[in-house]
Length: 76
Image (spheres, rainbow, N blue to C red):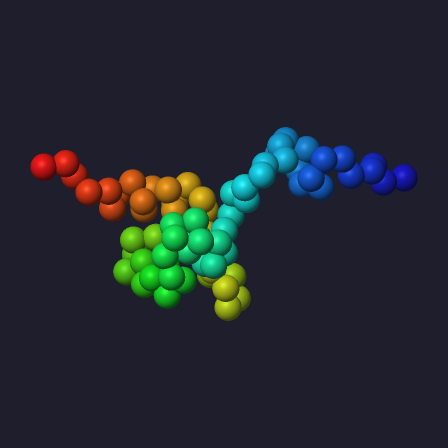
């Protein structure tokens, strides 16, 4: 008999999280408050690592945060 799903339906070691760990281009754009075309430009330029799954990209939230950190303006 199969065990009933508990929590978020993911692996047992993965806690339910209000924000997804893996983002679509649209979600990454919304998170950064930029247009999705800009996200595609960052991916093509190699500034934002992404996995292409078929016709769509998936991006780790930590990579989006690392991009944001790398583009921070330096104080003068």
